[in-house]
Amino acid sequence: MSTLQETAHQVRRDIVRMVHGVQSGHPGGSLGCADFLTALYFKIMKHNPAFSMDGLNEDIFILSNGHISPVFYSCLARSGYFPVSELSTFRKLSSRLQGHPTTHEDLPGVRIASGSLGQGLSVAIGAALSKKLNKDPQLVFSLHGDGELQEGQIWEAVMFAAHHKVDNLIATVDWNGQQIDGPTDKVMSLGNITEKFEAFGWTTLQMQGNDMDDVIKVLEEAKSLTGKGKPIAIMMHTLMGKGVDFMENDHGWHGIAPNDEQLAKALAQLPETLGDY
Image (cartoon, rainbow, N blue to C red; front, side, top):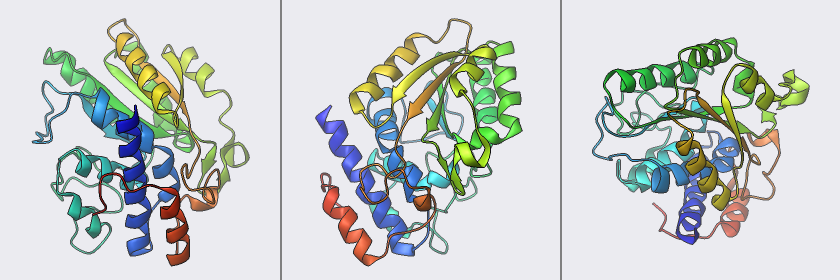
C-alpha cells in the first residue's frame, strides 16, 4: 500500500497548507480521514473524474460532515476532477472551493451541499434507492462524523435504510471521539455506536482508519457484504489531526488553522510525495 500511503501524505500536506493559507478551515477531522478518502478515490470506488451529476454506472460518495472539505477537495483534485493548482483558492472570494462544499459552484465531484450536519445519510439513501430503480449495480458510500450522530435525522435515516433494505449503501462513521466543543463523551455521550446500528438492523464492521492496509481490507469486506438485504455501517476509529503530532487527538484543532511556525512543524512531519500545488 506504499503508493496509497504516499498519496495520503500529500493529501495531508494539502490540508494544512490550505487552511493555513486563509487562516480558516477544519484541519483536525480532515487529517484523520485522509487515509480513508485516499483509499476510496484511488483504490476502492469506480468513479469518473469527467463527472456527471447523476452518477449512473459509477460509485457515488456523499460527504455528510462537510466541514472536512479540505481532505475532500484534495482527493478530488489529486484524482483528476479539477486542477490541483485550484487548491490554492480554498475559502477565498469567488472560489469554487468554499469552506463547506456547495453545488451552485459547479465543482466536479460535489453532488450535495453539506456541512449542515445530519443530512448526508438521507441523501445517500436516496441515491442508493435511485440506483436500485435504475438497475445500476454500483454502490453509494457516505462519511459522517461521530458528533454528527447527535442529530436526530441520522437515526430516522438509519431506521429507514434498514426497513427498506438499502443494501447498496456503505456508511462510515469517523469515530474519533472529538467534536468542536470537546470530547463527544463529555458533550453528549454516544454510547456504543456499533450496538446502536446493529439494533436498527444494519451490518457493522470495525476499521482502523489510520492504517491503510486495514482501510482497504475493511472496505473490500464491506463491498462483499452488499446485496444481502442490509445496509452496511463501518465504525472507523481515527485520531483527529493524524500525522501532525501536536494536533493529534486534540479537539482544539477541529476548526482552527496553524500559524506560520506551526505550519512549518507540520510540513516537516509530512513528506512531499506528489508535489505541492
